[in-house]
Image (cartoon, rainbow, N blue to C red; front, side, top):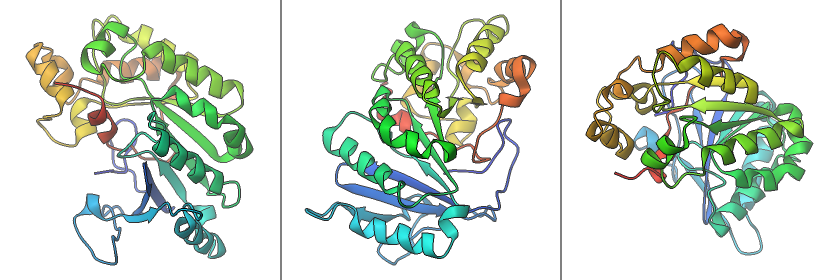
Length: 286
């Protein structure tokens, strides 16, 4: 579940509405995080269910793509709620994962924000394909943040634990391209993966993060998954490789301290929250 926290893991309860959005091949789901901190309060087909499944879904209709979602955004805009809201795009899915229909859905969704501007739009992705959206993103760059997942700086580690993700270098290049056009870009190290010696190499990783990103957030595997014994494919592979340090709750602490020492002002998340990262389940293999 998405929780509101600071980068160090302390609870933070935002006062502004937070809308969480995911794109699929045939539509969009949208939900709301309760600012009071009681979790997700969403609806599906007018009925309440479990927190993660409570989403309103807007299906792309032939000739009228996302028309229902546009009406919903229009209502929020008229009531003044959208201007106060933070929209987090890409919580359970990567909105720019390279599937033709899904990518088209994401682009149509982003186009809506030229007319219905939220207080803040935060896009979470690991895909270099986001640069295709630059013509639109530049129009809303003053209120837009892009968080790019960088779990490790080491290509061999990324290939071992997340073989289907874009390479680390592709993601660094994507961040540089977005920043070159004036967008605010963050590095989301969640969950943290091996980057070498957890003490000696933390400073080198931190320096790279602070150089390449406008902001940085860091979380351990346990913090990211929200359970004391994660069973994701990545966690299982780390255990099979006897990389037990990276499964500890405090595995992020050396890097967190190194980022604080390098540039403490960059250690934050623009929404004041740290979403869990089910995106990683899409790519990591056991």
